[in-house]
Each structure stands twice: as C-alpha cells, then as structure tokens.
Image 1 (cartoon, rainbow, N blue to C red):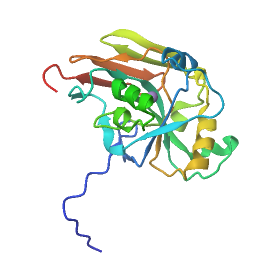
Image 2: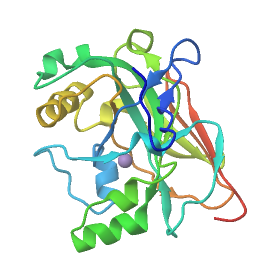
Image 3: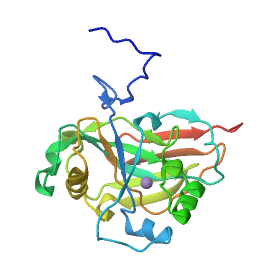
Image 4: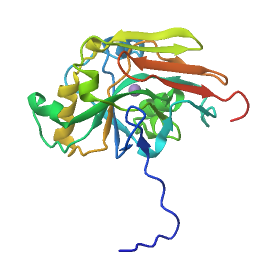
Length: 234
Ligand code: MN
C-alpha cells in the first residue's frame, strides 16, 4: 500500500549496533531521575528509595556520537550527565525483576544533556521538566553493544572526561535502582517495546559545558560517546 504524507516523514532515529550490521531503531527514551546517591546529594536532594521516577526524551533528540553541536539555545547552564543506557529488544509488560533482563537487547553509552537552569526553574514552579531535558541533541548516544557481548552488569566504571579532565567516575554498582528493578518498575507504567531505550541516571560530578567543550564518556565494555560544543554562535 502506498501512503502519502503532506510532507516527507522524518527519518527513524536509529543507533548502530557495535558499528556494523542492521541498526537499532529508537522508539522512546525513558530517563531515570536520581539513581546515584552521590548525584542526588550534589543536586541538593535527599536519597529516596521509595520509588524510582522518570522523565522522557523524544527519540528525535538523538545526537550521534562524534558530532559537533551548537551550544543549546535559551540556557546559560547546560550540563552533561553521563549515563548507562539499556536498549530494549522485546515486549515487557508488568514483568518481575527476575524476568526483566529477557527484554534487554543491549547497552550503550549516553549523555543526558540538560538545560539545568530551565530544569531548576521548572522544579521551582512545579512544572514539567521537558524544556530542561527534551530538546534537540539532548540525547547523545553511542552504538549499542549486545547484551551477551557486555556480560553481567557489575561494577564496571562509568566515566566522563570534560576537556580531558575526569569529571565523573563511579562503578555501575552505585546505582540505587538496578537495571532489572528499573525495567520491572517501568513495565508497570508502560508496555516496553523493542526500540525503547532507558537512560539509567548519572553519577556525581555533573557540570556545565561551554562553547568549545569536548565531552567524552563511556562505560567499561561499551563504545564511548564523544561530542564537541561548537565555539562560535548559538
Ligand atoms: Mn540524567
């Protein structure tokens, strides 16, 4: 069947799978808030193990690793947040933590770029976080490594270098909510589907980028992500 659209439909955002073969098409991006105690504390929040909470980014926020991007508009305090990302490869609805890993296709390195000033204002005004979190190039993602190639999630290091200086450095075992717990909890709220991606929160050491900043970050066993903030212009 031939479908007509009033304009050309957008390309489907997609990630390479360990840089060869078919792509991983992105569906939705779910992000976990405050999943590392030291980061919650640096943001002035209490550590809360009552329940995880989430926000989302459009898959069209995707920025492929290796790119140079403009400093985001309407912010004077744009922050990097290095995150371990879980790529979903099978439907999961109301699954238990014990079964949750069956839904995982693989993992990727990602940076949750954040307009911290707009997020802070939204928190203050009790408004949604969208303008602080969901904007062009705000999901900087590397290629997906298959689950079996990465192995067990344990104490692999998650790290980020800002202009060559180590800014974030923690073991994945510092996560308050484990990956199976996050998948189980999210699958209560949503039917997770192939192509969904979960950014599992950032460790301590987040900070502001500036024009000319080079960010490089990764997780041991995954391909790192790198992005450069353009020097000139907004
Ligand atoms: Mn984040």
